[in-house]
Each structure stands twice: as structure tokens, then as C-alpha cells.
Amino acid sequence: MKTAELHTQSREQTILLAAHFAQLLKGGEIVFLRGPIGAGKTVFVKGVAAALGLTGSPTSASFSLLKEYRSKTMRLFHIDLFRLEEGEVFNLGFEEMLEDEHAIILAEWPDPIARMLPADRLEINFVLEEGDERTLELSSFGSVSDRLLEELCKAV
Image 1: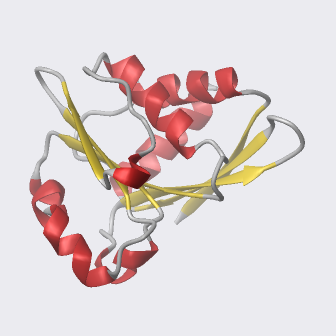
Image 2: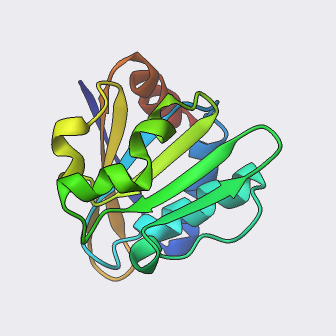
Image 3: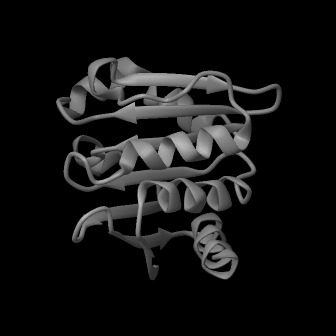
């Protein structure tokens, strides 16, 4: 496991950080987003989707649980597991998403799938600071996620 800490001072900086992150994605990456409501998880997802040129603008997935955004070459799954129990995750087709080598999975509130967490994943914990400042605590688990974390830290 590798760790890093990044800081943003505003919503715009969070979106810019997400855009840098998006440029590193090749498909097959799994990212779990943690943090309190309003910490910037969905803002980060919006930045990733915009930078990838995906159709549609991500909104909080809290009310729909799963949103899918596509381009010609990849799919982005934005999942919000906030109100789900472990067994309910199977109804979302999570296992099928994991098998899609072109898919990028950004999942908020991953605790209901703690026992199903893929071995190779990146976890980002969003910490609220004063005003619009955020600390993003990144932890990588596996070679793909290690690469993402290292390259993101070099890019910013």
C-alpha cells in the first residue's frame, strides 16, 4: 500500500485535480471515494467525466445509486452505496462492472462492499478543512493503483 496527501483550496481546484487524474485513466481502474456529505466526492467525479469527454454531467448518485457515462472507448460507472446493504450490491451488477476492462468505477461510500473490495483499487478520503479547502488522502492497493497514485502526485 502506498499513500499520499493532496490539497485543494476550492471547488475549481478539485475539478482541476480530477482532470489531471482522468488523463491517467486507461480503463479497468477502481476508485473508492470516502468522506462526509459535501466533501467534494461528486465534484471530483464531475471533473473526471468532463475531462474524459463523457456524455452527461454527473450528479450525486444518492438518489439513483448508479449512473453510467460513456464515450466511444470507455465507460464510467458512478456508484453511491450510501444506503445499501452488502447483499443489495449484487443487484447493481457490481461483479459485471469489475470484469469490464474498459470500465472505470468511481464508487462513493464503499463500506457495504468491504468484503468484496478488489485487491487492486485506489481509495480517496475527502477531508473537509476550513472554507472550501479539502485534503485528499489517497491509498493505493495493487500495481495499477500504485501507478495512478504515483503519476497523479507527479502531475500536480
